[in-house]
Length: 480
Image 1 (cartoon, helix red, strand yellow):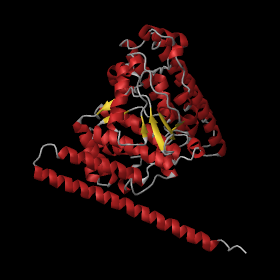
Image 2: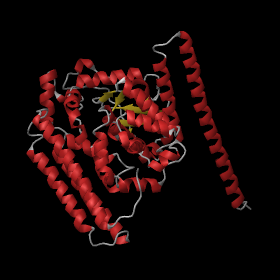
Image 3: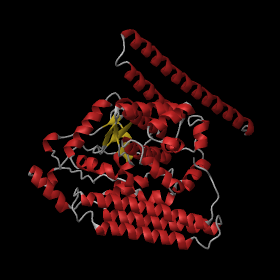
């Protein structure tokens, strides 16, 4: 549960210290693990890098503790000072990420996408890492291309991939993920697989791979430009409907998670572009960076489908059941809140019924750090597949928050459609023809119910719009 409570400046400073300490532990643990297992050059992950993280954390913690200690909580001076400390701390974190690169860049990219959770000073500062992260030197790039292709860099367009980041609870996954992400042939195969899997979505563009000029260390892809998917100004300038883009993104990821169980797990805004299709002028999503995918087991995928169906339709008994099947135990309310990024009160009222409010957003932001021990406990018990799903959900939610389309009823209904189809397809696998026919009718009826519910919501929206227009016309004087 996420509970809004009043806190003093001392509480604020202590919470900042706690959050900074956990961040330090996560970064240090990831760095030590990768260093000790020799996945990277020792010069890239050694004591110096970990030392920088600890030192930066200490400076940030001291700044919060001393700057806010003697200022009355809630006063105008307090709010102004807190904003300044947030900004200084965010710049220090950004400098740390740029200095340490690799895993730290990925952490910074993730934090920069959490508009719905972190203070604006942090997200606006760290967003630079989505598109302007430190790059490998030209000497390093030339050497790899010469060794693998026997060609000069001017002949080719090269995409240099940084290693995948892991928080402390993801350290166990590093051994599996890092070699895959550093294998560009694997990335190319993932790109072609997802392009084939989602070929029925005419709004999706996956750049073509040029295999004859690609190796495990060099990947040559079709160049596709566009604006970042969280750039609302770009969409408005190019007359692209942000609600349509948000719907497309939701459909695409719902299909990956619930129907196919093959999920692109790095959708930060630098990896998802949007543009107008050259031929039709319709909005098109360009999906980049296919190094990290999560392949879900069938058992996990079906439990995850059941859980989201229960959350969408507010079946709290089944919410508890499927949260516990996914390892949450008595912390099932926390798992539900983490998946939906809603308060427990909102989950009980119905996430598809009660839209996110500014008050709820503030409540979640103010109290997130207080639940770090419980979050750590929960993440130690859920299936390992859930960890990258959390990361993916966070990044997608950050995009929705930037576009102002978060938690729309339409997105939940699209998720529900995918869940219905996925569960029906599973039931049909091992049953008689008569039973398959029954399941098909049940599936069609459930999808019809969702369509009807969506139609009712649209009609209500139109009625409200007409009512507001009539009220406006009544209030405004007629022109003379």
